[in-house]
Length: 238
Figure (cartoon, rainbow, N blue to C red):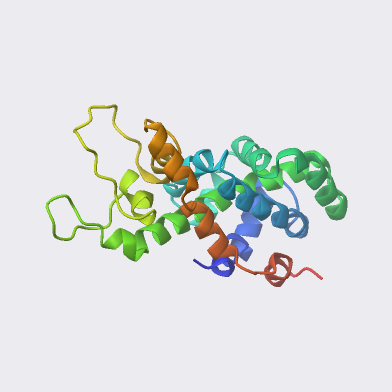
């Protein structure tokens, strides 16, 4: 996974122009707001993925947004739901949302409301691109590609609950057939099950002690990247 490549897509001239059109602000204002607030939003991504209390819900959100069609970024942003995006911003920034928005607004010379719209337009695209990258990265893991089915031999990379389960050391084999409601697919249902849904206490304790696959992938993606410098390179910040 490459944060620089993802930011290049998200902050392309076409993306900035479409966010400007969508929010009724100038392209310079959009750049200023994103340059100011995006580091905090990316930090929020890391926080959501690394916190055991939020990782399952965050994985579910990534799973949902990963299904979005971002092949045409301009079309995506034309149809983006800004109100929904503002909720995403709230989740990522938490108690820092008001202060982050105000600081970005002051720097850009905008109202808090206009600044919130820009962030609300950018947030769904951020989640969609992140979700797609994390899903692809999980599917590319050797542990996933080489999962052995119960009958022996090799099978294709699993989806749904088998995906991150395999990253934790191989898919679990139930001791007896289970009849339950259909399991959610993708990162969301998978981490929901791994972090407590429908499991025995002993299994929960074992898995809570295991490494957090999504958190590890986020850490790998962000690494030691200087986010401010990276954004300045794309947005022309000083």
